Amino acid sequence: MLSCKEVSCLASKGLDSHLSRRERFGLWMHLMMCRLCRRYVRDLRFLRRVFTRAGQGGMPPAARATLPKASRERIRRALSNADQG
Amino acid sequence: MTNTTNPAEWLDLYGDALYRYALLRVHDESQAEDLVQETLLAALKSHGRYDGSAAEKTWLIGILKHKIVDLFRKSSRETGEEFDEDRVCLDMEASFDKHGDWQIEVGNWSRPDKALEQEQFWQALSDCVERLPPRLARLFVLREIDGIESDEIREVLAISTANNLWVMLSRMRLQLRLCLDVSWFNKMGGE
Image (cartoon, rainbow over all chains, first blue to last red):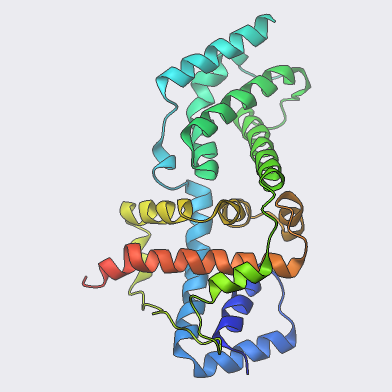
């Protein structure tokens, strides 16, 4: 019987790669009996959706940040120097 | 060359977009600013090689993406923080007892989908990502934000075995989940 610790790792691994038949069976057996791990696995799937959305639309504060004026000018100078150089 | 704007206009047209892209991934304003500058300088140099097939913005983001991956690659080697599996398991043991059972509260998230609509939720997540150890934060960006394949991630972050990668990913997600438990879902429990 797998421990909760092993299950947390296997469930996470399942998000990134294929689990073997044996691993899937072990996971399933444990989840049948463990409410906390069922909760954890459900939340991992939810987080995966959250992260995908973050990748697409960004997250505050980065999503609405603007390049500060001073660095914008600094970059402008660097670009025009490079252009002439 | 077709449909390309004057390089002098890139900063005004795409400066903010590039900055946001970088900031989401490095969580550091001055580093993000530097990355924008390096990207535009590199683009200026290779402007002649841009064939106009991709949208200009996409092309610039592509250059920036490479710069960020290079930065991650360099930092992962510079700091010499060799991944130490024993330490990771030790850290994870704070969450599990000696039998591997949960010894922390795995909070019951009520209506998590509602959170997605709330600005503060994304702020909380962003704060939680910032609290990750540097290597796990880079792992978060490569795997979760950019969806990069595991072999490439291992090369970039110098992770020696696939198993180490699975353990690190698991630990990263566990930490984010715990952090969100405390900073978001516990507070929202009463609603």
